[in-house]
Length: 140
Image 1 (spheres, rainbow, N blue to C red):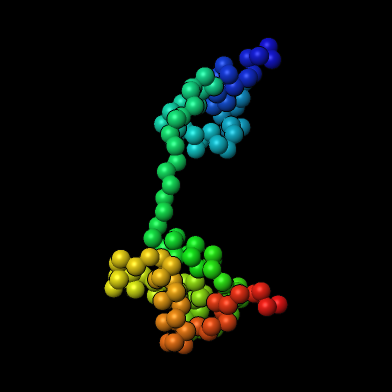
Image 2 (cartoon, one colour):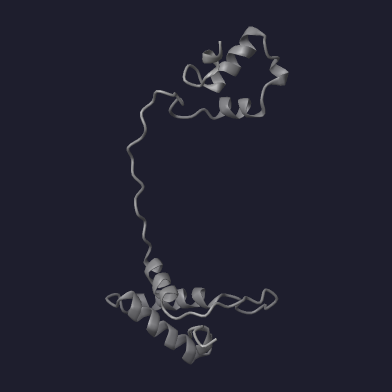
């Protein structure tokens, strides 16, 4: 009898549905997931003997990922955000990514490292961030 309770032979949904149909389980006492499963059944019936899918996960790389890697791979000192600041409360990284996006539109053939270094210098010169936020923590 124990073998008939394994999910190899029938899914849990099929067993609960059979118990409700035969009267072993009252419809009022059905599990919470039962209604959701009936409303939104899976596309492929979950069976024990179904072969494993062979699909592989694609690598998705966005343009700003290269700039993030160059930013964090370089010399970056972490910062804390002031949540009470009302004006321009973005992190240095988000300011840098926005500036890199603007520079990429002007110079589409530049590499991400060049874009990051140019954007850092422009942010420092414009006063939106300070040089110590981009310096290394190696001094301390």
